Length: 260
Image (tube, rainbow, N blue to C red; front, side, top):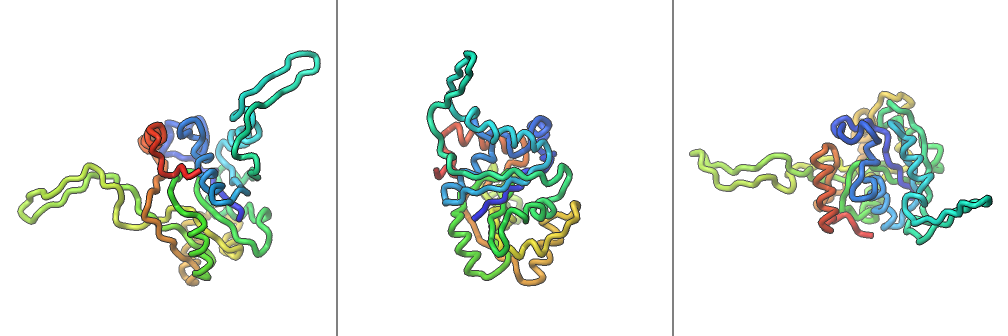
């Protein structure tokens, strides 16, 4: 299935990084977080990507246009007949990447609507955000979606705990203290969605419409929204602190999302 990734937001809560580059290009290790997301999908056999570009989208275009330059050792012949030799291969040689300009200030629903022309009629597609890493079994989510018969399946995840957790008796005595619990009990939309082609019917040509508002409300109203529960690792990169945390996990060799 084709993989649609939303890459156009401003990333205002990560201004330390996104002032200079689009959020999906913020690095985890020596590769952008977008690459990590794409590697996850490719691991499950989904290697046709459609990137919805917006804010500083030219940087993403440059990255993929110069992918060999970015990933290989290079020998340059500087004579009158110059040539370039790229050494070593990489695991992305069978990827297809469509870079679609969907507007610098567009909201998410409009971005997805803009790439409808790249998804053949009747064909489903995968959809996610360009700023979240997870250990989601992509093919299991597809199977759950197909079994549901719904138009769209979102992956329901537990958000990471952001505050210390106290368990307090009625008399005020603290029974336990957790500096930051790994997960909260509630579920939120973690992206990693599976969509039927008819999802496009729920999207308008209004650049101001967010996928997470009217279209999702309409899918719920029509009984067409399904959830695939994922209780494992999921971590968005919304803040500089979260970026640092993901980089530390990667540097320590403990990245649970590295399944390739």
